[in-house]
Amino acid sequence: MNTEGSCQAPPWEAAPFGVVSLLEMLEFAARDFLDLSYNVGVMLGALRRFGQQPNDLGRAIGQSMSGLPEKCKRLDLPVTGGLLGDFMVESLSGMSDSEKAEVLRNLKVTGDLRINNVKFSAERMVQHIETIYRGLRIELSSLLLRVIPREKGAYISEEWLADTVLFAKFPDTVVEFHRAGRCYAYGENTACVFHLMRVVDFLLGEVAGKLMIPYDPRTWSAVGQYITKQMEQKYQTKTDDWKQSEPFYASILSDLNAIGRAHRNPALHDLDKKYDDREAKHMLDIVESFAKHTVEGL
Image (cartoon, rainbow, N blue to C red; front, side, top):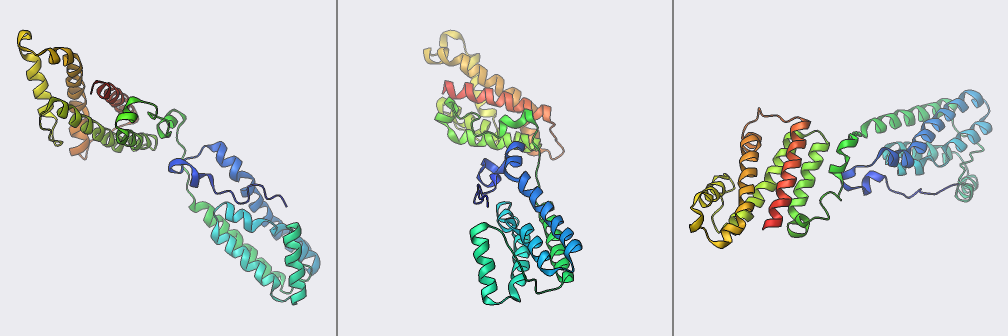
């Protein structure tokens, strides 16, 4: 029996946030899913062909069941695996101890389940196999998958923003960006904007700290008003430090006005405000640019 990968966990259990590519899913599960469905069909066919020949029926059923419990474990189908186990237990229930030992020994050595002396009726086998098939369909239908468009794939990657000054200085902001990126990839655009506003709030708090002014996260006005006031002073009265930093703060003010006016208040306070993919992508781009620029100037 080929046991390669038999103990391998489903790829979505190891992948970040349970997201895997179609290729990974096919490489992992396509053959096992096909084998499960095919082998259940073979068992039903064997009942029609060998219903009156117990030994031939037992061998055909046993061969079809070989490896199925392991495939169920690999595919995370515990109910179907349990139903297969019940079938196997009943298949062995009427055997002598020596017959059971032979079946189990052969199963261990070859991986084949050979039942040479079926002790219960074909009708009972039909009940088992139909129950297994129904359980398989129910479990497969309960495992839901969602396709993420190719153009959004970069936003669910852990590598996004990992090798940046932003991550080196404020790693928690990158975690928040990743949350925003996942929301965008999943089509939850309003949630995406909400997470982006948390990044902006945090960075503005850092800007306020550098300016040595108080910051109220409920409003951005204090930071903007302070920067505006400093910029409006006569050039001769400005300190050398401010003159050097003014282009940086001017950009902060510009970004702050654009982001706040267009998105911040509606995103947080208006339930009727909705964002489409284009708007969410635009916000991802401008907040990412704002964050990188801001952290480099702090």
